[in-house]
Length: 324
Image 1 (cartoon, rainbow, N blue to C red):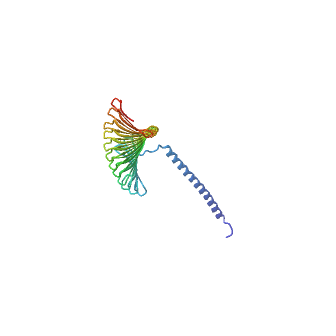
Image 2 (tube, rainbow, N blue to C red):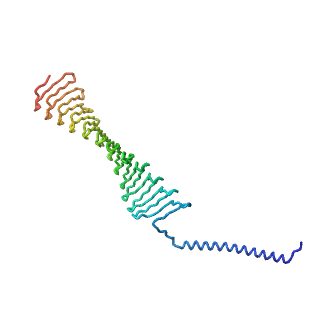
Image 3 (tube, one colour):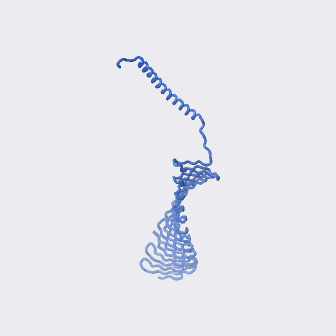
């Protein structure tokens, strides 16, 4: 049919009005939803935050595995532990009852390869352990700021120690197996330094030192720790060598002066000079003999022209013989 039917026109007009009304209702519904959401959020913001209380907080992953534990122990300590998917502790942070915190890393088998702690006095330390759980490296900083580094053997015995004192002095110590003996190097705050070597009994056997005036010395000791030989270079460059007996009394010493004579001295068991062999600056050699009172009693010298000269004196230092 090509003609328009009046009833069809009326129905079409009512459908258009219904569509316009439906659009208005949808717009009003969306607006109302936004209003309700905003009101809910404002209501939540106006409420005080809720507090979660308990002795332990457990966090699980999507598979229900425990991955973290936060709890307080009966001894007053509190700790946070992070676990892997198998429920094994891999990282822990704790604060002890005395307030000292610690941080530790854990292997799958429960071993702790690294541990960082802070004592109540303020001393910080880092410990690194081997697969057997023995601490092999320790790094510490004392409350006064002095740091130290120590290395240990598989038994946990300290074998090397590096320390820096608050006054700037530095020391490096090496220990032998068993903990006794070894070597120590010290650099003091005044600029002097020393190297000490010890035997298996812990006795110092050799010491090399440099003083504040640039003097240097080397001392060799016996098993009892007594100096038996000493080599020294004075600040003016004069060297000296001394050999001592078991009582540390000098028996032989040699001195080489820069401008004066070179002298070899022999002493008795009491450390008193009894004979001297010298070469003066002109190259003339001489031999002198002394009594127990340290009085020269005999003197033999080769003059620069090659002639020898001999002189003998009594206990009062009076000449009793001379030749030529």
